[in-house]
Amino acid sequence: MSSKYNALIIAFNAWLISMSMSVVAHTIDEKIADCKCDEACYTDEVTDLTCSGSDFSFKSNSLPDESHTLMIGITGNNQQFPSKHNMEIRLPLNPKQASRVTQTEPGAVGVAVNGVPIFDPSTQGPKQSSGKPVSAADAGELDECGGHAGRGDDYHYHIAPKCLIKELGAKAIDVKKQPVGYAADGFPILALGWFDKANDIEAKLDECRGATDVSGQYFYNIENQGDYAILDCLKGKEQRFARDKWVHRKNSKGKEIQGMPVKLAVTDYQQIESKGKSCYVMSGTLSDEQVLKANGKVQRVKQLKGSIFYCSASCYGQFVETRKAKARGRTSLFDSEVKGCAIDFVALKNNAFLDFSN
Image (tube, rainbow, N blue to C red; front, side, top):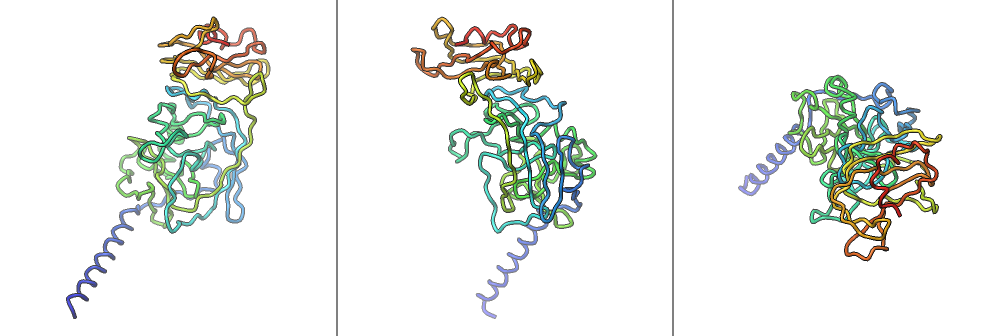
């Protein structure tokens, strides 16, 4: 045999060994739960679970359990409220790995077992040097549960759904090894090691944060510290898995309300009934904002406590950008309408933001 042939044999054997090690590295010795069609593996917020043909489907209102502390802890506020939606989810029962991975983009990349969508970590803002926008967590947009309300008043997670994982508990997560959710390609999302560090498989995950169980089932695993990442890319074919119907909030002029980002640190959030309507009230401290007062003067707000709110087109209040002010830099005012509010409506009491109403 020639030395050239020997070199080829050695190189080929090395490749086989490396491939073998790669397979082992991303495989766990246990079997994860396969319960896409089992209602016990979802929370009460999920309804109409159906397994038919090659797909499974369910419905939800896109809101988690009432015990979850929504919106608290947010400092970079987009002035949106978590409202009920009409979500219809459909995913493949037996997803297959694709020939190459799909990088995620800002937007939905999966759904949790409580019917709340899971988004890419990024915001929908301008791209950074990394090629992606700043993460929602770094922008201060996420609450204590790992989520927030998006531009469509749709509540969703950007990082580990911490309150949901706590709700599911150690038995479901680390003993039964049930999914926390499903990715947009249909593969399950788990949180092994969240309660029991002996189940930590961080070192065995591939580039998408995935691994394969002993039966050959591929899954993603949520990071239990640091960035609390859910998945970094999609291993299978991305599906158009969700349909949603909702009515956008409107102001007194009939225009859709788009939340303007402000530095409002949220300390309290309520959804209450008033005059037969669902009202949303978010309270906190506004800081470092240039605001136009009712008398036409511009004031730089350092620390101002108040509430933004919405009940209807005749009862609402939140900050919007204005061009009326003769001042440098962005200036906002508190756009409000209160003629349709109940006299005892909580958001009208001790609300300093109303001093800046148009």
